[in-house]
Image 1 (cartoon, rainbow, N blue to C red):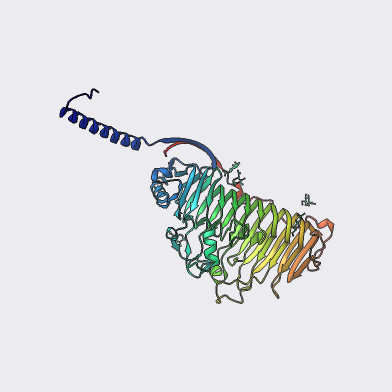
Image 2 (cartoon, rainbow, N blue to C red):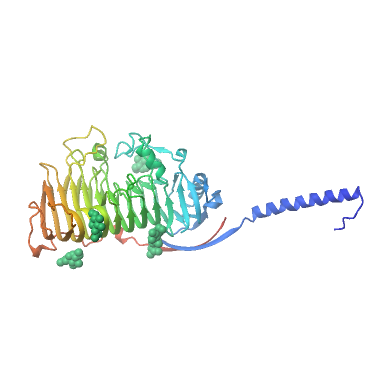
Length: 483
Ligand SMILES: *[C@@H]1O[C@H](CO)[C@@H](O)[C@H](O)[C@H]1NC(C)=O
Ligand SMILES: *[C@@H]1O[C@H](CO)[C@@H](O)[C@H](O)[C@H]1NC(C)=O
Ligand SMILES: *[C@@H]1O[C@H](CO)[C@@H](O)[C@H](O)[C@H]1NC(C)=O
Ligand SMILES: *[C@@H]1O[C@H](CO)[C@@H](O)[C@H](O)[C@H]1NC(C)=O
Ligand SMILES: *[C@@H]1O[C@H](CO)[C@@H](O)[C@H](O)[C@H]1NC(C)=O
């Protein structure tokens, strides 16, 4: 454009040019808005169901900068996707990035998928954690008498839900909560990372869970649950950072998990004292396989201590424990009621343990003082076989309930190598009954040796549980989403 004009016309032209530039600028801004970059992502995973509809959290205002709260974006996205529940279901994709968020709730026929470089960061703003009533089978919160903060990823009364990813991360940023807990400052019980209540057909797989405020994965009052390929890491001194706690659940399969934590790697539960007895919902038909556990102050697999709804038919195999306090531990008390029966564990390898086997009949923690002193738990049919341990301080510490022994204990083909500084007494047994075969060091008199021909005496069921028959489908996606 020729600008060597004389004023006032020149001024006029310059003005026009300015306006023009502004218009172009506005159009450019508009243009980038309506043509915000899209990204094409292709991925595949295995799941109990594949979905017809997909969206990314970025399409609902999500910002993965590690600072912006995405609680509303997650909840808006999920609310929007709920319209597809009866139309093939929907998947919410979380791209690479750091996604700060408080608690949000899932819906039925839904998949939450975390990209391998996606990190969900749990918010430390207490207002992002709504408070729920205590669990009916517990009667009170575990950290404080009242309610409990809703878990980061929460679902209730759902069916067909998948939480998975290419090993994406959920970081609970727990130190904030652990400090509050130690200072006794919590008004409510700490949140968990994933809790699914009153639900059916659940898959939680291929994720890494870091530094949970408390328990990591808590399926409760639910059935048909698959937990696969989960890595859980928390400091071994962090309070109550249990790995996976199936609680009043039927038909659960936990496999290929690696857990380092400050509490039990897997804790099987079913409610507490009079509340658990009244609710009356057992955990049964549970498979635990290919689990690696590191937990110096707790158990590889704990049964209890809250077991008042009963625990039955637990099958654990191919378990590795390293530097863990105990292998399998049964915890209960007078007042719990309920039962722990038909427990089968085989092919467990243990390195550097305080106790290979531990049973405690007087685990004291009670919900309140109203428990029924006549509610005696029944512990029977406990089968351990084909195990090797080394560097163990004490082979077993088995303490039943006086006048109400733990019965039907069977331990066969178990070789426990004692530590150089092992306790002199390798077994202590009180109020237990059962048998052993092919066990070293020589077991206590209450578990008499039946001779070498009974080395396969302890049961392990050979039939399949219904959850074993569930197969994964291969889900493939090609989706483009706004970034
Ligand atoms: C989890 O990841 C492993 C290894 O990448 C894969 O073999 C397995 O099928 C995945 N499982 C699910 C349920 O996605
Ligand atoms: C969920 O199901 C339980 C048990 O069936 C019921 O007591 C509860 O009211 C339901 N909650 C919701 C939010 O629907
Ligand atoms: C998942 O990530 C964790 C943490 O980075 C890592 O230790 C683990 O090996 C990964 N698992 C798989 C199957 O890639
Ligand atoms: C004893 O247990 C070991 C594994 O610890 C296993 O390899 C072996 O086959 C078992 N023996 C019998 C007789 O079952
Ligand atoms: C045996 O256990 C002790 C702790 O009890 C540990 O310091 C030592 O390194 C372990 N030895 C081996 C060979 O693992």
